[in-house]
Structures are given as structure tokens and as C-alpha cells.
Amino acid sequence: MKIAVLASGRGSNFRAIQEHIQSEKLDCKISVLICDKPSTGALDIARRFQISTEVISPGEFPTMEKFGSALMNVLGKYRIDFIFLAGYLRKIPINVITRFSNRIFNIHPALLPSFGGKGMYGKRVHEAVFQAGVKVSGVTIHLVNSEYDAGPIVLQKCVSIEECTSPDEIAAKVLTLEHKYYPQMVNLLLAQEIAVNGKRVVLRERKDDQNK
Ligand code: GRF
Image 1 (cartoon, rainbow, N blue to C red):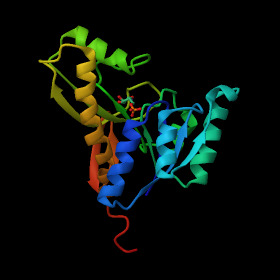
Image 2 (cartoon, helix red, strand yellow):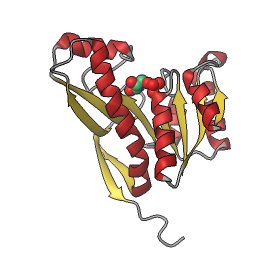
Image 3 (cartoon, protein in one colour):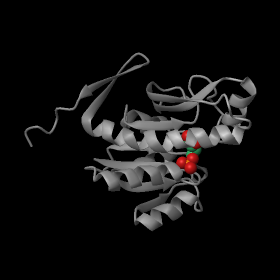
């Protein structure tokens, strides 16, 4: 199983996934890290792990479709099976979503469908959660569709934030959950197939390589 990780920032989830694959000796690899700009923490991490990197900047393409074609060329070159967005701030072009139907995942640092959507990323999410006075927050791992943070939910985990006195404290608690559960998506994909019924994700045992 070959994974591409797409990131725009510091890359701590990318690192957590890579470390999990290595420590558990999982039968898969991150074949490429794709960033939308040339200097990100994620790129530095990839170099440290000797993972191939590609930078594809959407601004260099006249249309989303052409940006999508450039992404697909790279994904094809590395024979990618699954895509993990890890702090990737760009919209995924529709031609990529169609080609990789139910094979693109995103992690969001709150419990969707609350506190998500366009412009809700990074610190803004935790500030909104703090202001709302909710008592739990958490992580949502979901399939990517054409709307921000709106794809079918695969996994959610929550944490009490009753004692938190700032958005930063919430962010730290949630990040710990992210680093635990996003890497576990890899185990899930190795063992299960994902189907979608409306907005509900249905998991089934993978049978495909029994006779190989
Ligand atoms: C994480 O909080 C993730 O949930 C969100 O963007 C942040 C990325 O952090 N989508 P990092 O770059 O993985 O450290």
C-alpha cells in the first residue's frame, strides 16, 4: 500500500504517521510528500526520513482542473493508493477526488460537523471551540469531497476540555489525539475496505489478497 501525504505546514501529523509505520513495521509506505509551497516544516521532516518530496503550487496553474492533472501525474508516478491530507490548506480538485474516490482522508482538529468549513483551520478552530464554551472537543477523520470538512466521517475521538483555560491548551490536547489516531488509519486501511452509504461510512474486512 502506497500513501501520499499532502501538507502545507509544520508536518507533525505526517511525522506521526511515518513513525507509526516504521515502529509497527506496517506493510505500507509513505511514497511521497506533496506540499503546495517550497518551505514547510513537513518538507524538512521528509528529508530527515528520506521520503521523496514534490512541490506543486496551485497558483502556477490557470485552472483547478490543470492543478488537479499535475497532482494526478505525481500520484500516478508514485503509484499512490491512498492520500492523507495533514494540514493541507488547499482545496482538492474535483478530478482528483473523482479518481481517488473514497481514498482521500483529512484530519480536522474538532468534532465535525461543528467548527469546520472554509476558513476554519489552525488556531481559529480552537478559538471558536473555546468561545463556544463546549465541554468536549476532539478529532475527526473524514473522507474528502468537494466541500471543506464535509465528507463522510470515518473516525471521531473526543477529549474533555472542561479544565482548559485557553485555545492553546485545547489545541495541545487535541493534537495528542491527532498523533495517536491519524496513524491508526493506516492499520484500518490495511485491514478494512471503506464503502459509503449516504453520509455513513461502512467498513468491511479486506479479502483482496488472500490468493496472492
Ligand atoms: C492539524 O491540527 C490538523 O488537524 C489540521 O491541521 C493541523 C496540521 O498540523 N488539519 P501538522 O502540520 O500536522 O502539525
